[in-house]
Image (tube, rainbow, N blue to C red; front, side):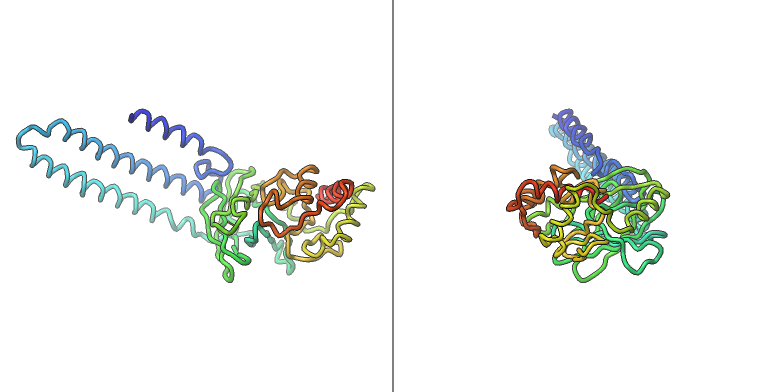
Length: 324
Ligand code: CUA
């Protein structure tokens, strides 16, 4: 039985690997949390072994004389002294680790706003007045501490990239702050961690950690206006984008589309995923999303365009895919 429990625990913990796992830390804050988890688990195992040892012991000596005094001693040791010592030790350890999680950022500041159900991401390169806006993907330089302002529009969300650090709520009407210090370049996955409506479960984000110089190049490119469409199909897609009213919700910098209701699409094709982590960024997913977004993300504000002929949807997707 106990071997079975140990095996089950091993399987459960082994499945905790991956790009959205607290137990595969890729940032200083996540390392502290993973460390804390293992110490807590160790403490829990010590307590579990003592309590079970106690039970086993008494199941064998219950018929002996003088067992009452022994029982009192065990109850005092295992019921009072041991839990107090172990839990106090773990509390002191946890309190010592906490301040590290509150260190302010030193270089980059960005703002992430929780929307229904996607993430607005804004950077201010070199103190610019106007933010460089993107969506559903945050990029951070490795090896430095970035400050993240967390806001929300409408309802509460919670920002959490388990491989990089702890989670913080995003509350309408106020700005919460957190800082993250990723250590290893890579792509990690974040997930909204506060129930926020019908598509809460469909509110993921990609977190791309880059070498500092690579990050600077990316931010420079991101600040530029959208590319002009190449090829007849994409050019027609741009005309459709403007004539179908997409600019009533979305911005594509450098075009007449400047609304801020939905995600900024200026460099959409350069992102790793579509619809807040739900679909890969490719032509087929774009067509599927444009024609029936409700089937992918129930309750979404984006209207479906399945009344358009397939050739028009393909043209729109060609334009959007080319916005790299
Ligand atoms: Cu946003 Cu749950």
